[in-house]
Every structure is written in structure tokens, then in C-alpha cells.
Amino acid sequence: MVELADRIFATVKDNGQRGAPLYLRLKKTIEDAVQRGIIGPGDALPSERDIAIKADISRVTVRKAVQDLVKGGVLIQRHGSGTFVAPRVDRVEQSLSRLTSFTEDMARRGMAARSEWLDRGIYPPSPDEMMVLGLSAKELVARVSRLRIADGTPLAIERASLPTAALPDPEAVTSSLYLELEKTGNRPVRAVQRISAANLGEADARLLDVPAGSASLRIERISYLATGRVIEFTRSIYRGDAYDFVAELRLGGSETTGDSQ
Image 1 (cartoon, rainbow, N blue to C red):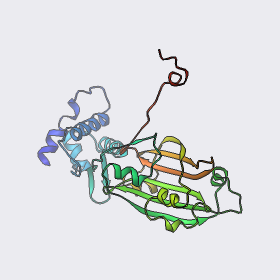
Image 2: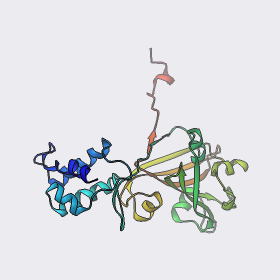
Image 3: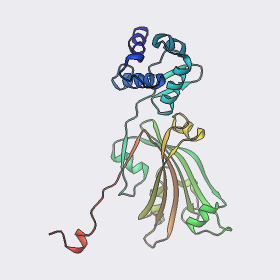
Image 4: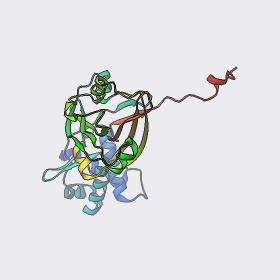
């Protein structure tokens, strides 16, 4: 790593970004080294002191560049161990046009899916749950929360709420929630999803094994039965570095009016 450090950091002040702040030049130097495979996932970086000496810059400058790269998911820091190149995560592409469970979705990709249960129980409903699910204050709600993992990588946190009439025993869900709902004729047939970007808080970042402040996709899904009744209210958090959501769009008018000729 000594020779590697010499090659990477000795050129920080002469890396084609003249005029840019030194911490941005150091940041780009490290990013380029990762992208070109000069340093790979799991490789340790030299200490702040060693980088500062090699690059002939201050430790404060080094610290700022490293912190930016940790926030961006390029590097990870382990208390007492140092700074490392973050593991590379294969991105998962999910269609927004199909209503499927995580288990089914991963199975189609040949990935081994599993869950770590965070919560399964019956609770008094929150104001949001009452409004979305159409529950009264006297009714109860079933909650199923879990960490979703594929091929050993934590990808998402799902927190689902359902009327107890549809899921009287949350403990009965052992794998797919939708398969359990299908047994009682309560599997949803359509859903409306709202997607927004957000930075992860410490608790959720710890579950997803990424630094706090990392980018994530928050998805709020309201699912319906064929009758139009709301059957599921799920709020999920997906790793921004691992998930791509894809939607197929069609031009309106041509199929319904026959004006395409």
C-alpha cells in the first residue's frame, strides 16, 4: 500500500483540477482510483496523517475529502480500524408496472432472498394508518416490518400496515406477505406508489449497512383489492446505491382514439 499511496496521492495538486479546492482534488483522486480499480472494495486507505504527508496537504483537507466520500458511499469508516473502500453492490432493477413481493421479485432474478424480522404485531393505529386504511380509533392494525436481504446484501426496510381483518395473525407471515394474503383472498390487485429521495438516519443506515446520511429511496405504497378497498399501507426505504426503479411509459391518445395514422 506504500507504493500505491505514493502513486495516488503524490499527484493530488497536479490532477487537472487547478483552481479547485484541494479537498475536491483529493476527493476526485480517490474516486478515480476506485473507479479504475487501483484500489478495490475492502482495501484500506492510509491514515489521514500519511495521506496528508504524501499529498502535501493539511489533515483538515484530508478529513473533509474523506468525509464527503463516506457520505457518498465510496468509502466506509470502521471505528478503531480505519477507512476502507466500500463494498461494491450490484444494482437491482425493479419495474414499477408490476405489483409483486420482494420474495417473488428476487426469485425471478435468481437471487436468494431472506428477511430479518423487525416487528410483527397488533397495535392501536396511528393517525396515518387510520386515514389510509379507513380504521376507527377503536380498531387495531397489523404491522409487519422487516429488513430485506438478497444474496447477503441488505437492500430495503419494509414497514407494512394492514387491517387485522386481512391479517389477524402477523406471526403467520413467514416469507411472502402477499402469499399469506392470497390464502384468505386478500391479495392486492393494484397499488399507487409515491417515491421520494431522502438521506438515511443513523438507525436505518445501520440496518442497511451504509453510512448515516447515505442516499435512499423512500416509497409509500397503498394497495387495493379488486373491490377498491385499501388492504395495505407500506412505507419502505431502499438503498440508493443498489436500486433502480424503471417505468414503461406510453404516449396517450394513439391507442384510444385511433389517430396514430
